Amino acid sequence: MAQRSIVREYLEALIIAAIFLQFANTYVVQTYYIPSGSMEDTLLVGDHLFVNRFIYGPAASDLERRLLPLRSVRRGDIVVFRSKENLHIDVVKRCVGVPGDRIHVVDKRLFINGKAVDDSSYTKHSSPDHYPPNSLTQLATRDYFGPFTVPPASYFCMGDNRDNSWDSRFWGELPERYLLGRAFAIYWSYGGSTSDGVWHGWSAKLADLGRTAVGFFSKTVWSRTFHVVR
Image: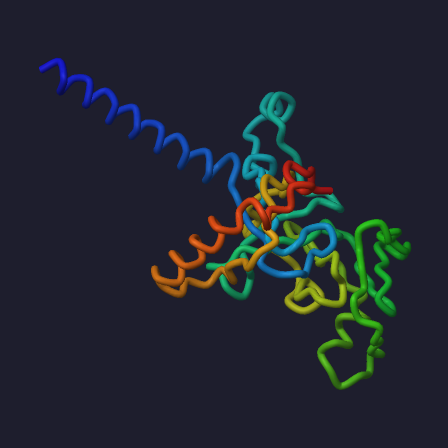
């Protein structure tokens, strides 16, 4: 009887721990990895992030707003959100425009409310090509966009790698309801091959895990571990 009681206690403890972890991962802190180069050099392929799911949560009262670490999205926040084009995919970009902001891109230069943005410390342009606004190519939107006013309860997001990012210049504003949270730290960065985020079956998953385990020490980018995301 005593042995059964101990087993039951351990089982209950494991169930409670699993519920707590699932709650925390859903509502407080979630993990996310970078599969593409659209945020280089701020975030690199293989970076694994902690995402604060709590910060943009609603506050029911003034007291909660004062006591809890809640706030609205700000320009410059690196946000994770559901893709407007495929809700099964999570995306990470930098918020450059909040509701009411007037966004204008002229020859790759970002303007907000008529003022040029000094973003040289975190943006990069990987292509020397420039496409004028009358070009018969979608890339003209990359280099020349707007003016566009961000609607209420929406945000305008762009990748830091401005020439290699599919972002609000192409698919429009980000509705607030798609937000998942704010990226705040890199807990691990892996320099080896990284999953493309698409499920290819258990055999591919096991092979990927095996490669990661073998190359963990040699391909981990230790200098990026616990790096704060800005």
